[in-house]
Image (cartoon, rainbow, N blue to C red; front, top):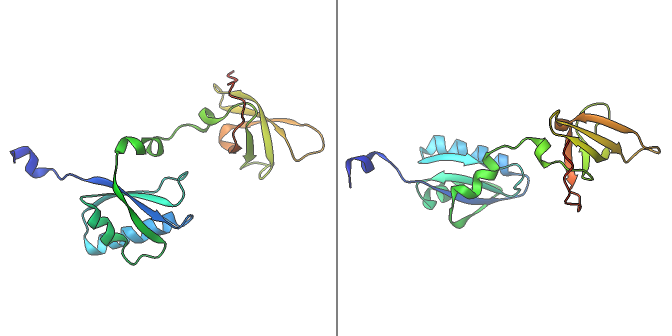
Length: 164
């Protein structure tokens, strides 16, 4: 072993199956156990779009097993380590506007139309605004809102991208 290798610790990222919707609770309980048991675990990742899983960076899978042992809603450790390149899409946050396209169905999450569903008729990427056509009204009313005010419900089958 060289002088440089003595100070570094090799870790791997391991996947833990959980009950869907309980990922954050399991992560909080595991974090508490890490502190009390002084386990060599470096990080816990709970990706929002991936339900039923969390990722733990540790020196070995046996430390992850020890961390989740007896914790409610923690199911099991998936065998094998995960390559960090597979997790980049969950770590790097893309702006909401990049995901939106014309004809996508969205739900408005803020403002006076909160909770209503709409169809995107135009996307202005430079201003980060989308023009919507509300679906739950008797007459068509185009409204323009900031892209952060919408959440994608269903992607359109139309693969064309309208950029303005």
